[in-house]
Image 1 (spheres, rainbow, N blue to C red):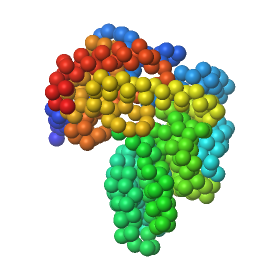
Image 2 (tube, rainbow, N blue to C red; image 1 turned 180 degrees about the horizontal axis):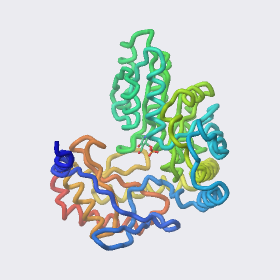
Image 3 (cartoon, protein in one colour; image 1 turned 135 degrees about the vertical axis):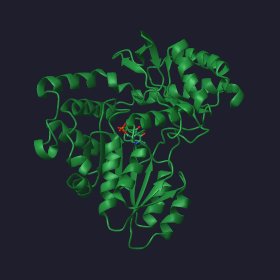
Image 4 (cartoon, rainbow, N blue to C red; image 1 turned 90 degrees about the vertical axis):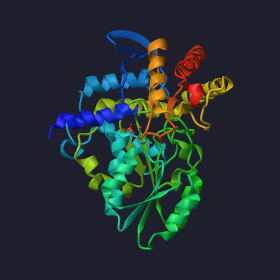
Length: 403
Ligand code: PLP
């Protein structure tokens, strides 16, 4: 077999469908976020990033940078191995205590990313608990889906954000099964929010465990930045809360928080925790500074929500098809993968605006979009410039005609 020919054909398929992924070659400018330099077509130019998940700009927060610098100087670059082999760095302990407190849980456990935390935890729980069945929201993230698949446990998919459908499926499950209900709080592509209390009511009725992914909400919602569960006073209704240190907290890493026994169980049985090198102490120190800051400061959260509201209002007033939601995510609908790709290219080339096209399988076919993520650092002038650029782009790419 000609292996390369096989790979090239598969890549051509993606290109023909207009969903071959191209990543901008960026240098973020610390202290000047959301500005960055892009390396493109042999040139370097300054651009404005409109699609970062560093939602609050914590990746350039002086406290975070200082914590990382001093951890690097004092402790060196890496963790030196898995925690199983090389021990736990003290920053891991401090960060896990902070994360447990953030969610009002007894304990927390760190992973190298949010993806790994979902994948490792769901696979460990569903593979080990007796006769486990996972009840998974139809819009759950790939990392949860992979974790469930890897466990080889049975899976039942309930309609997105639909407690009644969940109840219907739970009622059909054998009495002797362990039931795990897995969902997210803020869905990152549509920006809609789960009916958490209602889903927990249903889960409680059937004695099910509740697993929530708060990746797009931690740092951003609630008086402590503990996510939607924090905002709604629901943390104790969830058996397990999963989050990331890579988005609103601006660094890298993932975690789960729950009861001491649950966390110790995952720590002791999860391959995805045990057999991989621990997070660098530099990352852990930065994340610790970020979580501590956002537990006390409301300033970034308030400015973030205001920026999202302002951008949505401007876009709607100008007649752009913004998907309605109550969160910080601003999906601008295009509805065609090729148009979406060319719109993104045009914005970058002509206006120095970076917004990544979102195509299938990240979103269903026909709902391709530009996903804008305004931060506290995008100015009103940035927004007005974006609007003018979008207006031209919509005309140039013929998007008005298809929308
Ligand atoms: N869960 C959700 C809902 C996500 O959107 C993502 C990443 O985008 C993850 C988990 C993975 O988190 P991380 O980027 O920290 O790996």
